[in-house]
Image (cartoon, rainbow, N blue to C red; front, top):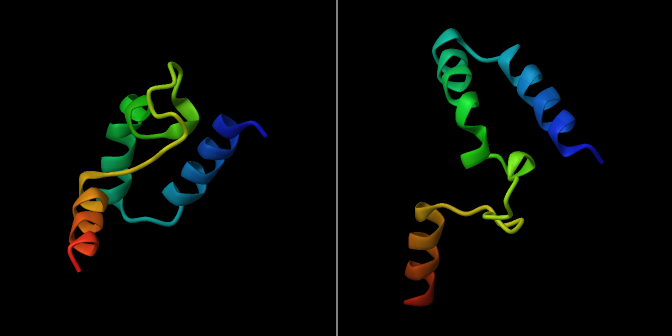
Length: 65
């Protein structure tokens, strides 16, 4: 599977259905996709794991229950 081609195809579809503001935001952030898109992780920093601080916070809340 060519993950980069799949990712770019999905982004192209997404850009076709969103409004102008989200479209501009996404286009502005595509230059930094290596930081947030696993398909463009070139040095293994993501280790095939995607997470966020929100997910980590939610997991910590669940651990406390």
